[in-house]
Length: 167
Image 1 (tube, rainbow, N blue to C red):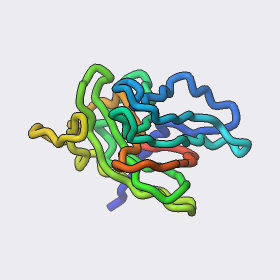
Image 2 (image 1 turned 180 degrees about the vertical axis):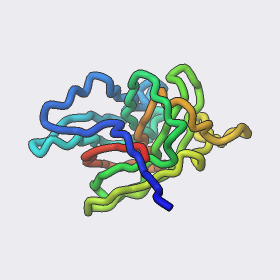
Image 3 (image 1 turned 45 degrees about the vertical axis):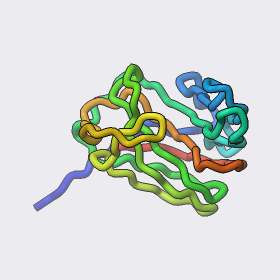
């Protein structure tokens, strides 16, 4: 029996990558003062970095990718090749950017390059830090992908991302 595994590149960063579909959303939307940015380094990898502050109802920083909707029904896993300052992040998806809630999984970043796998079907719904009593990610359409850091502490962070794939 032969098993054919297909994959789809969601985003492969290089020195010429257009970051215009990526948006920074920090706690400033709620009065906070956390800061972050997304840039490309000389190797052509994305760098999402900044600092999280708990002041003024703050506590999170995020970067969101809003592609044209992607059919993800044939895929089981998100794979992220990354490294950075050791920390915990949320990987977040939405079926549509219009959804108020996100589907999340936590990932732990290390200083060494790693390929982190996130099971799409295990991504659970959350809104403003609260898990919702609705089904997990339906694994049909991807309308938004994001990284969020919100560990309930003051902290500097940095994650370097080479690529993101669906498998």
